[in-house]
Amino acid sequence: MSKIIDFALAQVGKPYVFGRSGPDSFDCSGLTKRAVAQIGLDWYHGATTQWTRGTQTGAPHQFDYFGETGAIDKLPFDKIAFLFNQDKKRTDRLVMAHTGIYDGKGGVYHEATTYGQVVQAGGYGGKGVHYNPLDKRRWSHYAILTPYWTERDGDTMDDTLRRGSIGEAVRELQTTLMALGYDVGKNTRADGKFGPATEAGVKAFQKDYGLPQTGEWGTAEAQALDAGLEDELGPPVNDDDVMVPRSWLEGVVQDIQAMLGGVK
Image (cartoon, rainbow, N blue to C red):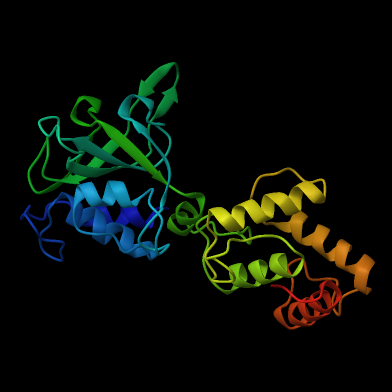
Protein backbone atom coordinates (compact mmCIF):
# COMPACT_ATOMS: atom_id res chain seq x y z
CA MET A 1 0.00 0.00 0.00
CA SER A 2 1.14 3.56 -0.67
CA LYS A 3 0.85 6.06 2.17
CA ILE A 4 1.05 8.88 -0.37
CA ILE A 5 -1.78 7.57 -2.55
CA ASP A 6 -3.89 6.59 0.45
CA PHE A 7 -3.64 10.09 1.92
CA ALA A 8 -4.38 11.79 -1.38
CA LEU A 9 -7.43 9.61 -2.04
CA ALA A 10 -8.75 10.36 1.44
CA GLN A 11 -8.94 14.04 0.41
CA VAL A 12 -11.08 13.43 -2.69
CA GLY A 13 -14.16 15.65 -2.63
CA LYS A 14 -12.57 18.47 -0.65
CA PRO A 15 -12.62 21.89 -2.35
CA TYR A 16 -9.81 23.56 -4.28
CA VAL A 17 -8.58 26.76 -2.64
CA PHE A 18 -5.44 28.43 -3.95
CA GLY A 19 -2.63 28.54 -1.40
CA ARG A 20 -4.16 25.94 0.93
CA SER A 21 -2.56 22.66 1.99
CA GLY A 22 -5.34 21.19 4.09
CA PRO A 23 -6.85 19.97 6.16
CA ASP A 24 -10.16 21.04 4.64
CA SER A 25 -9.09 22.39 1.24
CA PHE A 26 -6.09 22.16 -1.08
CA ASP A 27 -4.46 23.54 -4.16
CA CYS A 28 -2.43 21.22 -6.41
CA SER A 29 0.96 21.52 -4.70
CA GLY A 30 -0.65 21.77 -1.28
CA LEU A 31 -2.07 18.29 -1.84
CA THR A 32 1.27 16.81 -2.91
CA LYS A 33 3.05 18.58 -0.04
CA ARG A 34 0.76 17.00 2.56
CA ALA A 35 0.78 13.62 0.82
CA VAL A 36 4.57 13.23 0.92
CA ALA A 37 4.66 14.42 4.53
CA GLN A 38 3.17 11.00 5.35
CA ILE A 39 6.60 9.43 4.68
CA GLY A 40 8.77 12.17 6.22
CA LEU A 41 9.36 14.47 3.24
CA ASP A 42 9.06 18.23 3.74
CA TRP A 43 8.19 19.81 0.41
CA TYR A 44 7.95 23.48 -0.45
CA HIS A 45 4.44 24.66 -1.34
CA GLY A 46 4.73 25.27 -5.07
CA ALA A 47 4.80 22.98 -8.10
CA THR A 48 7.88 24.57 -9.68
CA THR A 49 9.96 24.31 -6.52
CA GLN A 50 8.77 20.76 -5.84
CA TRP A 51 10.06 19.83 -9.30
CA THR A 52 13.40 21.66 -9.13
CA ARG A 53 14.30 20.67 -5.57
CA GLY A 54 13.76 17.03 -6.46
CA THR A 55 17.17 16.89 -8.16
CA GLN A 56 19.04 19.55 -6.18
CA THR A 57 21.48 18.98 -3.32
CA GLY A 58 20.35 19.83 0.19
CA ALA A 59 18.74 18.42 3.30
CA PRO A 60 17.65 14.87 2.32
CA HIS A 61 14.07 15.31 3.49
CA GLN A 62 13.73 18.48 1.40
CA PHE A 63 15.96 17.95 -1.66
CA ASP A 64 17.19 15.28 -4.12
CA TYR A 65 14.17 13.06 -3.58
CA PHE A 66 13.55 12.17 -7.24
CA GLY A 67 15.43 9.18 -8.59
CA GLU A 68 13.92 9.36 -12.08
CA THR A 69 12.44 12.21 -14.10
CA GLY A 70 11.45 12.57 -17.72
CA ALA A 71 8.99 13.66 -20.37
CA ILE A 72 5.45 12.42 -19.87
CA ASP A 73 5.60 10.14 -22.91
CA LYS A 74 8.21 8.05 -21.04
CA LEU A 75 6.08 7.60 -17.90
CA PRO A 76 6.28 4.01 -16.55
CA PHE A 77 2.63 3.07 -16.15
CA ASP A 78 3.29 0.63 -13.31
CA LYS A 79 4.98 3.07 -10.90
CA ILE A 80 3.59 5.76 -8.63
CA ALA A 81 4.78 9.11 -9.97
CA PHE A 82 4.34 12.83 -9.50
CA LEU A 83 3.09 14.53 -12.65
CA PHE A 84 3.84 18.11 -13.66
CA ASN A 85 2.61 20.35 -16.42
CA GLN A 86 4.98 23.03 -17.67
CA ASP A 87 3.67 26.51 -18.41
CA LYS A 88 4.59 26.82 -22.07
CA LYS A 89 3.85 30.56 -22.03
CA ARG A 90 6.85 31.20 -19.79
CA THR A 91 9.93 31.31 -22.00
CA ASP A 92 12.24 33.06 -19.52
CA ARG A 93 12.42 30.14 -17.07
CA LEU A 94 10.88 26.78 -16.26
CA VAL A 95 7.55 27.11 -14.49
CA MET A 96 5.37 24.15 -13.53
CA ALA A 97 1.74 25.26 -13.66
CA HIS A 98 0.18 22.14 -12.14
CA THR A 99 1.03 18.92 -10.32
CA GLY A 100 -0.73 15.71 -9.32
CA ILE A 101 -0.07 12.10 -8.30
CA TYR A 102 -0.29 9.13 -10.66
CA ASP A 103 -1.37 5.90 -8.94
CA GLY A 104 0.89 3.48 -10.88
CA LYS A 105 -1.97 1.13 -11.72
CA GLY A 106 -1.48 1.08 -15.47
CA GLY A 107 0.00 -1.69 -17.56
CA VAL A 108 -0.75 -4.15 -20.31
CA TYR A 109 -3.48 -6.67 -19.59
CA HIS A 110 -4.67 -9.15 -22.20
CA GLU A 111 -2.86 -7.15 -24.89
CA ALA A 112 -4.75 -3.99 -23.92
CA THR A 113 -3.04 -1.02 -22.28
CA THR A 114 -4.59 0.65 -19.25
CA TYR A 115 -3.21 3.92 -18.03
CA GLY A 116 -4.07 4.25 -14.36
CA GLN A 117 -5.51 7.33 -12.69
CA VAL A 118 -4.41 10.65 -11.23
CA VAL A 119 -5.46 12.28 -7.97
CA GLN A 120 -5.14 16.05 -8.13
CA ALA A 121 -6.51 19.26 -6.69
CA GLY A 122 -7.99 21.29 -9.54
CA GLY A 123 -6.93 20.63 -13.09
CA TYR A 124 -8.88 18.72 -15.72
CA GLY A 125 -11.68 16.23 -15.22
CA GLY A 126 -13.27 17.43 -12.00
CA LYS A 127 -13.56 20.03 -9.26
CA GLY A 128 -11.73 20.24 -5.98
CA VAL A 129 -9.66 17.16 -5.17
CA HIS A 130 -10.62 14.45 -7.65
CA TYR A 131 -9.45 11.11 -9.01
CA ASN A 132 -9.76 10.48 -12.72
CA PRO A 133 -8.04 8.70 -15.62
CA LEU A 134 -4.62 9.79 -16.76
CA ASP A 135 -4.66 12.10 -19.79
CA LYS A 136 -1.07 12.50 -20.93
CA ARG A 137 -2.02 15.52 -23.03
CA ARG A 138 -2.50 17.44 -19.78
CA TRP A 139 0.99 16.80 -18.44
CA SER A 140 4.53 17.49 -19.63
CA HIS A 141 6.78 15.73 -17.09
CA TYR A 142 6.85 12.95 -14.51
CA ALA A 143 9.06 12.23 -11.51
CA ILE A 144 9.50 9.08 -9.40
CA LEU A 145 10.90 9.06 -5.86
CA THR A 146 14.28 7.51 -5.10
CA PRO A 147 14.26 3.87 -3.92
CA TYR A 148 14.76 5.02 -0.32
CA TRP A 149 11.61 7.16 -0.31
CA THR A 150 9.69 4.67 -2.43
CA GLU A 151 10.35 1.99 0.18
CA ARG A 152 9.19 4.28 2.96
CA ASP A 153 6.02 4.91 1.02
CA GLY A 154 5.29 1.21 0.55
CA ASP A 155 6.39 -0.18 3.93
CA THR A 156 8.98 -2.41 2.23
CA MET A 157 12.06 -1.05 3.97
CA ASP A 158 15.12 -3.30 3.98
CA ASP A 159 18.59 -2.90 5.46
CA THR A 160 20.18 -1.73 2.22
CA LEU A 161 21.72 1.73 2.41
CA ARG A 162 21.63 3.74 -0.81
CA ARG A 163 21.65 7.28 -2.12
CA GLY A 164 18.99 9.19 -0.20
CA SER A 165 19.30 7.09 2.98
CA ILE A 166 19.79 9.06 6.17
CA GLY A 167 20.47 8.30 9.81
CA GLU A 168 22.84 6.60 12.23
CA ALA A 169 23.45 3.55 10.02
CA VAL A 170 24.72 5.84 7.26
CA ARG A 171 26.96 7.71 9.69
CA GLU A 172 28.51 4.43 10.87
CA LEU A 173 29.04 3.33 7.27
CA GLN A 174 30.74 6.62 6.44
CA THR A 175 32.95 6.33 9.53
CA THR A 176 34.00 2.82 8.51
CA LEU A 177 34.76 3.81 4.92
CA MET A 178 36.81 6.79 6.08
CA ALA A 179 38.78 4.60 8.48
CA LEU A 180 39.57 2.23 5.61
CA GLY A 181 40.85 5.12 3.52
CA TYR A 182 37.83 5.63 1.27
CA ASP A 183 36.73 9.16 0.42
CA VAL A 184 33.15 10.06 1.33
CA GLY A 185 33.60 13.76 0.48
CA LYS A 186 35.64 16.54 2.04
CA ASN A 187 32.50 18.40 3.03
CA THR A 188 30.47 15.29 3.81
CA ARG A 189 32.53 13.33 6.34
CA ALA A 190 30.29 11.29 8.65
CA ASP A 191 27.14 13.39 8.46
CA GLY A 192 24.64 10.54 8.18
CA LYS A 193 23.48 11.55 4.69
CA PHE A 194 24.06 9.09 1.86
CA GLY A 195 24.81 11.41 -1.05
CA PRO A 196 26.94 11.25 -4.22
CA ALA A 197 30.26 11.25 -2.33
CA THR A 198 29.26 8.35 -0.08
CA GLU A 199 27.95 6.49 -3.12
CA ALA A 200 31.35 6.97 -4.80
CA GLY A 201 33.09 5.65 -1.70
CA VAL A 202 30.89 2.56 -1.65
CA LYS A 203 31.60 1.93 -5.34
CA ALA A 204 35.34 2.19 -4.69
CA PHE A 205 34.99 -0.35 -1.85
CA GLN A 206 32.96 -2.66 -4.10
CA LYS A 207 35.59 -2.43 -6.84
CA ASP A 208 38.39 -3.33 -4.42
CA TYR A 209 36.44 -6.30 -3.04
CA GLY A 210 35.29 -7.63 -6.41
CA LEU A 211 31.60 -6.77 -5.93
CA PRO A 212 29.18 -5.27 -8.47
CA GLN A 213 29.63 -1.50 -8.37
CA THR A 214 26.02 -0.60 -7.58
CA GLY A 215 26.79 2.13 -5.06
CA GLU A 216 24.44 0.47 -2.56
CA TRP A 217 25.51 -1.04 0.76
CA GLY A 218 23.81 -4.30 1.66
CA THR A 219 24.45 -7.80 2.95
CA ALA A 220 27.18 -8.67 0.41
CA GLU A 221 29.14 -5.51 1.24
CA ALA A 222 28.80 -6.04 5.00
CA GLN A 223 29.99 -9.63 4.66
CA ALA A 224 32.96 -8.54 2.52
CA LEU A 225 33.86 -5.95 5.14
CA ASP A 226 33.62 -8.52 7.93
CA ALA A 227 35.86 -10.92 6.01
CA GLY A 228 38.41 -8.22 5.24
CA LEU A 229 38.56 -7.01 8.82
CA GLU A 230 38.82 -10.56 10.12
CA ASP A 231 41.89 -11.10 7.94
CA GLU A 232 43.48 -7.98 9.42
CA LEU A 233 42.27 -7.98 13.03
CA GLY A 234 40.86 -11.42 13.80
CA PRO A 235 37.18 -12.33 14.11
CA PRO A 236 34.73 -9.70 15.41
CA VAL A 237 33.04 -10.05 18.77
CA ASN A 238 29.82 -11.28 17.17
CA ASP A 239 30.33 -12.55 13.63
CA ASP A 240 26.71 -13.68 13.35
CA ASP A 241 25.57 -10.10 12.75
CA VAL A 242 25.28 -9.22 9.09
CA MET A 243 25.49 -5.48 9.66
CA VAL A 244 28.28 -4.03 11.81
CA PRO A 245 27.28 -3.43 15.48
CA ARG A 246 28.15 0.09 16.60
CA SER A 247 30.12 -0.94 19.71
CA TRP A 248 32.26 -3.36 17.72
CA LEU A 249 32.56 -0.86 14.86
CA GLU A 250 34.02 1.85 17.10
CA GLY A 251 36.74 -0.49 18.34
CA VAL A 252 37.52 -1.60 14.79
CA VAL A 253 37.73 1.99 13.61
CA GLN A 254 40.21 2.83 16.37
CA ASP A 255 42.37 -0.17 15.46
CA ILE A 256 42.33 0.69 11.77
CA GLN A 257 43.08 4.35 12.42
CA ALA A 258 46.07 3.34 14.53
CA MET A 259 47.37 1.09 11.75
CA LEU A 260 46.87 3.78 9.12
CA GLY A 261 48.35 6.52 11.26
CA GLY A 262 45.02 8.25 11.74
CA VAL A 263 42.50 9.67 9.27
CA LYS A 264 43.38 13.16 8.13
